[in-house]
Length: 417
Image (cartoon, rainbow, N blue to C red; front, side, top):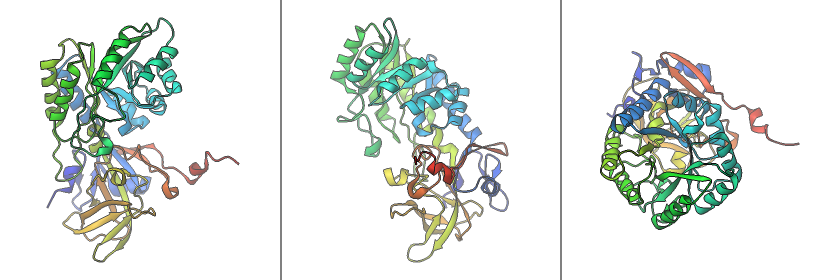
């Protein structure tokens, strides 16, 4: 039998009577305090993961910084925690930028992304003193040269599309020819040349990002090779994309193995005095999160359906990307029959996981789904009038809500008479 706890945050355990404890907090107490569904975050696990990244990169390439790809979990409390751990912030919208600043993120550590940045967003970034703005197209250059005051020196990176297609879902593959992101190498060369003559924009270097949920280090090495040929720069942003372990069969490279692959290639091809940036997102936060549901109905038959009080309103990754998640009864250990875990929304596609072994599932059971710290919060929605769940930080037996559950009044808050 696969050990369900192997997918949960490190340190997760069960009490003698089978109850899971997240960050030292029994799930029954968490459900009683915060209700279900709820997104639980093991704060210590998240900090430990961040330190593996920051310490590992600094040991391998001292002139470097880890920058959190915050679209994976754009929550003020997460920005604050990771800023405290010394990470910079990758933001891809005015909203993410505003949240990061509200959490106390260092403006100089902001890397501003986006393939369709508006004038408003660029003005926000420039006014905030964002350290780097990533040039995704020539229109970005035109807009910034209008927005940055004369005599300014806004740092920029050119995003390169290296024509690399990693083995991942098409929706999260970004480095292949025809991608909407970045500039192919010949156009990137033109952008580099143009920026070299700008009196308002300072070309600091280049950026590459080839996708997400990548389970092999070779494509990352190829991406470094692709940008190395563009010349010598002060900064090389190598992006992110390392895969997370969602299922028992997933076997992504370790953080250390990933860093070895990147830095070994960088040592061969990049200037030794350059500054390296990386942008982990999913691989940084996924493991720290657990979604907690309550079973509402159990429908036996050829397929046993266990329906919970959440679903695609709080976890859209299954419907969007076909991502598989595992699950377990959170208050009872043991082997179980294969069940299909479904949500409460009016869609046949509202399936959280098929064929998960749940021991004797019953209405009222608490069901835990691990590895939900990435993208579930960002993609949560109000389908069928669902109220988005709270985010609860758990640490050393204590818990605190950092995002409250939405209310029915919240659903009408923006309506006009």
